[in-house]
Image 1: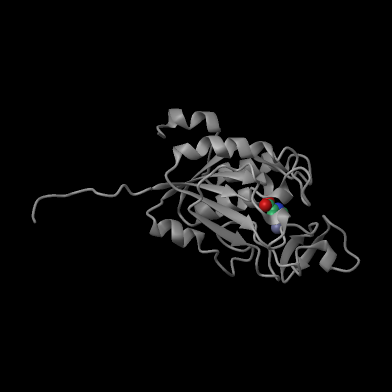
Image 2: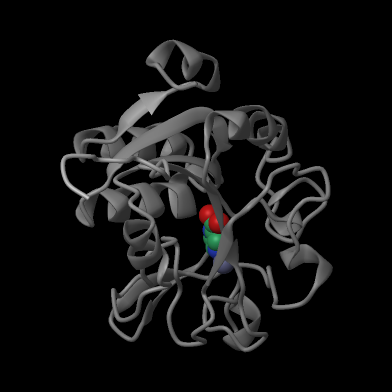
Length: 220
Ligand code: VGL
Ligand code: ZN
C-alpha cells in the first residue's frame, strides 16, 4: 500500500492530572485543606474536556518518616532534616488502605491510571512524578509519554505542596503544564503560601487558568 496515510487512532496529546483528591485532604480528614472538598465539583466538571484522565494518590506506609508521630518528641508542622532534605512533619494521613487515603466518593471521573506516591517510608513525595529527593519515579511521566501525552492540566490538593511539585516536575520533565487554579486549594501553613506557589509555577512556565476558561481555549 502506497500513498495512503490512514489516521485510525486519535492520540491523546493532552491529559488531566487529578492530584490527591483524597478524604484526608478534605474537611473532616487528617490533613484537611480548607475548602478542599470544593475542588471535587471542579474536577467533575472539567473531565469532559479530556480523553485521558490520571490521578495521583498519596499512599503512605504507617511508618512513614513524614509523620510527626514517628518522631518521638516532635509535633506536626515542625520541620526536620530527613536524610538531607527539609521535611515538614505532618499528622498521620493517607495511610495505605485506610478510608482517609481513599478518593472522595463524590469524585465522578473515569481515571485511566492511578499513580501512588509517598510509598517509600524514608522520603516524602509531593510530586506525582518523583519523590522529593528525585531518587525514584512513580512512573507517571514515562506512562504519559508512552501514551503520546505532551501537555498536562493539573488540579487538586494541595496548591502549595503536591500540586505545586507535580506542576514543577511536569515542566522539568518537558511537559507543557497548565494549572486549573480554581480546582486547587492550599494548606497555607504560612499565609500566602498558595499565592507564592502559583507565582513559582508561573515562573517555571506553568500556564495558569480557570476551569471556566477551558472551553474558550479550544478544548472540546
Ligand atoms: C500533601 C502534605 C503531605 C499534598 C501530601 O497532597 O499536598 N501535603 N502529603
Ligand atoms: Zn503525604
